[in-house]
Length: 212
Image (cartoon, rainbow, N blue to C red):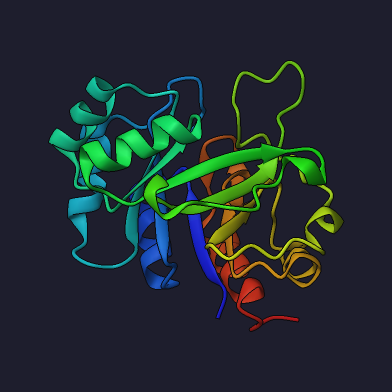
């Protein structure tokens, strides 16, 4: 079964929809330039409102130790998803002793990683399109990538497909790329930063083959 992450959760209704749909991960965005930005206190309130359920992922852009430490003082995260370089990702994995996902925007086949060393401590790579030239966010821009780039890419480490996925195109994306895990944000929103419980449910059912 395809694993699913719903990123950019900011409200109780959306969080409850993720729990009800049994998604694998929910993402909290700790990047102030995102319309999905959430404070550590708000993320903690949501996370503590329901015990169990999806694992909690914290998304950070070029973070430092102080920023991540501040967030972790408020909310228990299961995973750190980082927009940074591989060396820093390894450092944060060792520093905080949490699984680290490295977000890698790509535009061509040569951008794809082909090897992840065990000592790098990177649990998963998130593959998504490079942002538009004038974008202020490295991800969450609603742009898809050329999925055919991944057709002949067969890594020996876990990875996740992101970027412009919607209930309408996720099945095709999975077929073309062979992705075992997908990440959606703007594709299940009724307005920037505002998730739709109905779209979340539709996305999950489609990704898992319950709707053709």
